[in-house]
Each structure stands twice: as C-alpha cells, then as structure tokens.
Length: 214
Image 1 (cartoon, rainbow, N blue to C red):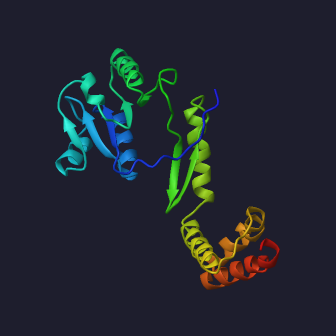
Image 2 (tube, rainbow, N blue to C red):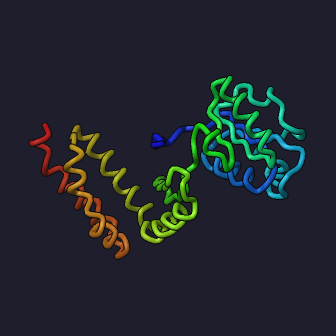
C-alpha cells in the first residue's frame, strides 16, 4: 500500500483520543502541538495525561469508550489496551466517515503517523508505511543531526525574500528558486553569522531573473 503524504490543519478541530496510557499520551502531545481541541476518553490515566487535564489543556471523559464519543470528531486516535475495543472504534468511526488511527494496527487504520521532528516551521517526516518503525526512527534520528536549528533562520530569511519579491510583483519559477537555494552555501553563511548577506544574495540572484519571468 502506498500512503498519500499530506499535512492537515487541525487547529481548533475536535480530535478524540481513546485510551489513557503511554501511547495515548504520545498521540495527545502530538495533537496538542498542532493546536487541536482534544477529548480524551479513559477511566484510568497516565500521570502526565492527568497533569494536562488539570491544566485544562484537554477535556477528559472518565469512563470507558462509548459510540457517542465519536460525535463531531475530526479524527479519532484509538489507543486502548483492548484489541476488541479498538476494532469496535474503527468500525464505528468508519460508519460515521471519520478518519481513525488504531495503535499498532495498520489494517484497521485509515492513516498512519510518521516519525517526525520540527525546526521552527520546518517539519520533516519519515515513514516506511508501517513496515519498520525501528528503521523509520533510525532515519529520522540521522536527519535530525543533518537539519539543525540553523534551518529555522534559513526558513525565516527565505520567507522574507519571498514576501519582498511578491510586494515588488516579481514572480520566480520553481526551477530558479531551486538554483538559488544553495543549501551548503546558505547554511555556512548562517553559521558564520552572515544573515544579512544571505538575504542580499538571494534577492540579487532571484531578481536577476525578473525579465525572463515577466
């Protein structure tokens, strides 16, 4: 199976996590980072989940799962310790046309969650389609070493350059952008504290293609 890679805006959307253990905690934290409104359903709680509830970061329904818990949900994360309950959640979610992820069960999940990390607004995600979580984590760990915090600065500078070009009415093709974004050179300049030089370099290189693009 080939999964379609997509980043979804879940800010302010109701996401339901069913379960109260470590897996539920991990999924809850990931959803919170993206601004979801989370309802957690479980009679027992991991201590860290309990802290989130006390801080009113998430809503808690203190009982076992009921079908009504799925109402108006955008996505469902099932992470109970009962395979039977998880399967029931999957079937009922599909009946309501709600995307569902079942912990450790690819066959019953509508989507899988890649191993990812962030550098500011830059998100890098890795997936092996669920075939090898260990390899997925290994690759992500290697990429984390390659893509350091300097990419936060680079992305910010590129955003400024794009904004200035847009204000000037200059359109740049994807091919020209690729040519201008010499990552080795740009990262070396950032590490040397030469952010201003980067912005001038990019603007000069990109504006040089103005006539061709117009």
